[in-house]
Length: 318
Image 1 (tube, rainbow, N blue to C red):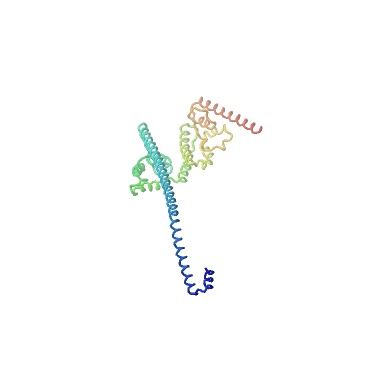
Image 2 (image 1 turned 45 degrees about the horizontal axis):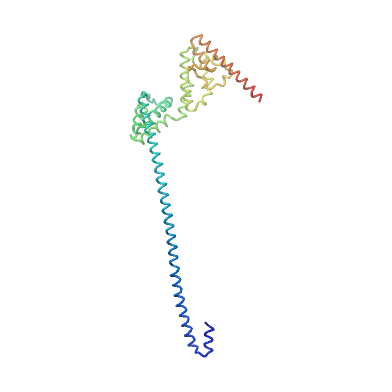
């Protein structure tokens, strides 16, 4: 452009004329470029529009696929839940049917009223929990049963509670705190064992009564997993049976290691242990029965000795 302007001036054209010519040329070039740009836009826009439409269609198809998959998963989960509900309903119906059939066959159990002592707690609460607290009845009905099964002096502690679910739960908490603390219940049974009277002689009736009271409290402690707490009283308890103590310990050199579970009387007809045999000797009124039991106990001792010898020989071999 500059070269052309220089040539025009050299040919003698006026500078103003050359300047106007240059401005005109620049204007025409600008108009041409503007037209060219519009043409380019016109050609480019349909391509971009087509690309945008294709992308939108693709996104729309993907969204439809996601929606379809979600609906299918939702239907599958609903079907699973329905199958589970049907199964649980069938199980509940079968369980209720079984309970009704059992109830029709078995006589209704009677729960003796709770006397308000730690010694009576384990017996009462195990029965109440099984028969009433776990029964398929309302909490209010359970509360009514609970009140009916308490002697007046115990019931007075919960009479002021509201007759609803909250009242029932509070009543159980109050009774458990007052009578059902494991340490207090265990101590009551331990004290009952310690307080057993000394039985003079070997009268079967008195020995059997002694054993019955001892067994009741030992079983309660065993149920509570507190039996180890009284094993130290075994020798003291044996000393309360001076008339039969020698018979109880003479067939077992390790009687010093006895624990309370060793005081068992067999009534099943099976082979009896040494300790069980000794107890039966003390309780047997018939002389022939004493002899039979003594022979059975002696046989048990011999078998134990043989087994121990074999075990020692095997261990020394290896």
